[in-house]
Amino acid sequence: MFQANHTRVSEFLLLGLSEQLEHQQLLFVLFLGMYLVTMVGNLLIILVISLDSYLHTPMYVFLANLSLADISSISTSVPKMLVNIQTKSQSISFGECVTQMYFSIVFVVIDNFLLGVMAYDRFVAICYPLNYITVMRPRLCTLLMATSWLFSNLVALTHTLLLVQLTFCDANTIPHFFCDLAPLLHLSCSDTVLNQLVMFILGSSVIAVPFGLILFSYICIVSTVLKISSAEGKWKTFSTCGSHLSVVTLFYGTIVGVYFLPSSAQSVNTDKIGAVLFIVVTPMVNPFIYSLRNKDIKGALKKIISKKMSFL
Image (tube, rainbow, N blue to C red; front, side):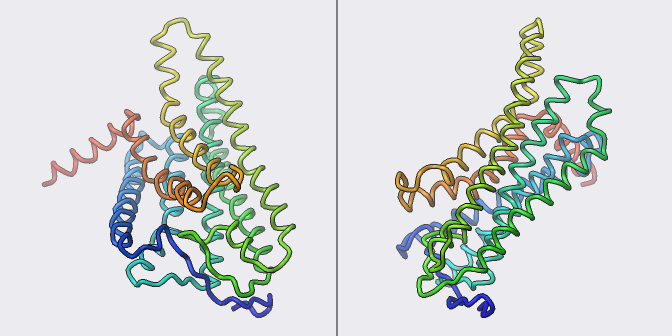
């Protein structure tokens, strides 16, 4: 308990995805499988990029950071849910809940910024190919990544510091499978107007700034591609953006469904489904999108496998 903040609730109850006992083992197997696939897929992406010097370019360094963020994002919620199912317990301590909320915000925000940075990288590569090496120098790439991680933690820290000032009285049941900011604010018996205002301002900014950069980048990219005379040249140039566009569509589609649709238009179950798509499914499919659509990743993976096979 946080006595300094007059918190009366020492733990919360996470109701999970279903309260029906007959569904618990099915959910455990399903989410354990998705968690393992996500871990293996994203770790493989990081490993391939680390081992192949040909992939030590800004685009793939950003991709490795995105995979790291995806691993971390799913690890903030799914392992706790799996433990609760197996132990038949729904409890999570106040401190653990706040920590889970903090890191879930961090990795949501870092995904936003990284997708924006990756769009900028594609913009420079396609619109200014002769200046690419000069513009996307290692120092700038490091600065972009460090800034993204720093701002992500600052946003999460702001929400967390405001949250722990609130008083939580008798209500401690969260109709979700992880501690998200909005359900926690609904449980507080304090005035949450400031929290809601900050959540709206920061949330809108975190979405709008990277999305604006993505939109600007792709408007310029499309304009450049249209100037290419041959249809084959247009397709070859724009195809380098295919994986990133797929991830952007999936990411922003799910995040809008979870956080920006009016709550009156959603049921609790719809919120849970949207959160599953965003927290679990998106990190799981990202490695497949990049590995299946990216010749460099597939080529590097084949080289690593062939080398391993030659030693056997």
